[in-house]
Length: 574
Ligand SMILES: *[C@@H]1O[C@H](CO)[C@@H](O)[C@H](O)[C@H]1NC(C)=O
Ligand SMILES: *[C@@H]1O[C@H](CO)[C@@H](O)[C@H](O)[C@H]1NC(C)=O
Ligand SMILES: *[C@@H]1O[C@H](CO)[C@@H](O)[C@H](O)[C@H]1NC(C)=O
Ligand SMILES: *[C@@H]1O[C@H](CO)[C@@H](O)[C@H](O)[C@H]1NC(C)=O
Ligand SMILES: *[C@@H]1O[C@H](CO)[C@@H](O)[C@H](O)[C@H]1NC(C)=O
Image (cartoon, rainbow, N blue to C red; front, side, top):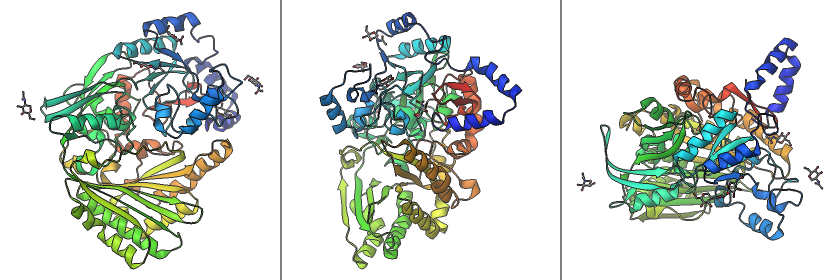
């Protein structure tokens, strides 16, 4: 971790005996080569790499350079800077850029419209705008030969900072946009419609293609339409509005097409390279291979009910919490019936707002969905609390999905999976914890769902953490990010790690602890067991087999504990 490490390193050097210090120093030859070091390739070598990529090597110019006069990256332009500011919060601003991370922390105040100066900071040094498998092979050959850090960037929609790496060449997969409809995919474990999407295809593009295929299909994709489908999303599990009905995105995978660390192009399915298939489906993005494309099963379109419910309340009003408790308990049978509910508790200066929606029940009409929500609405009326509610039956799932853009998350996040048993047996404890979190002015964004289904009707076993199968709520906490004061963020990260998340953890039994590896605190202690559960050791072995030189590194990715990031981002073996 670029930002946490310096004090830890200083501390450990201070207490280490000299002999050990020297021993570590000798090993430093196996650190990844960092810009400015003698091992860094010459301009001519970079030109050769660029030529082998048909001119698709980009020297990183931070997105904020147009807002700075004192930089050699891009000329200052007040007009372009104003333009950038006007659409800063839109995901496309960042995913169309080769290097801008969506979670601002990972730019480390190096060069944004709000930063004091403009340097590369933790951004990739070069970005390969890859167009095919051969480009990926060329980059892998180059990084292996010159011992250069590699990163894989899709959309940059990534809270854990896996896709941003200082001194690296980034494989930018965003432009791998192929989509293929396979009406009759056949394997021993599945026969039916499937969709093959390239690594750069985003959720909405894939969902649109599924909708247009045959008589209309759906796939499991994220609530946020811009999330790259085949990247960290599906590789990390992947939840969304249809997850209770069909399982997580990783549960839908029929096969992966990958380039391995050694540069081989492989298909990984339950029949071929089954161990790699298993690891890629749930074991996290950017750890095992470079995914070129994924083939997932599709499900027939069906009518879908969708609703939303919004009401402001006073955090001290016990009646409001009774309403929320009623809602929380109703979300359990709703999820069992194949529904999902996204709900946010947003603390404002005076009141908290409950922002519920979409509540989605596929294969059902508004009257079915209404039956789950009725007790909550009745209570709101009884207490004469004002609320906005809307509910509709749509002819298809596709028609039910709002087309409004979802902004980038300008929060420091932390997450936990809350098991069903906790909500069932201790709803009051859960509510006290939510109240405590709100008292710290953190926002709560929760997804109620039940993804236990695939255990009974699996396409194939995968590496999704077992904690997911018992979870009733994927809880995401957020503390607003401060663009100008680095220290405030550092303090808020500590609040997340040391105060807020332990309170959630205290609610959950020791055998049931877990967190969704894509929506979690990057400082999370014990991340191996919390993110991967009992699968961790097997995942490590598979990593060792396919990536023996540990070419793929990502913060909190499988095997990352073998590396440490120094203050400037230089990556060294532990
Ligand atoms: C790679 O080549 C293209 C085309 O010649 C050029 O526009 C680009 O600036 C080069 N990239 C680097 C990093 O030199
Ligand atoms: C401009 O950047 C250079 C190099 O980073 C730095 O030494 C100098 O202090 C900067 N000047 C201003 C006015 O920020
Ligand atoms: C992040 O910023 C801090 C404070 O300016 C700096 O010490 C550190 O080197 C930076 N890390 C990276 C990777 O840019
Ligand atoms: C990346 O490559 C695509 C073609 O695959 C091209 O359309 C796009 O302009 C390139 N982006 C940049 C920033 O060079
Ligand atoms: C493919 O599937 C469709 C229905 O899903 C069916 O009508 C058609 O006969 C199948 N084609 C083949 C070649 O199996």
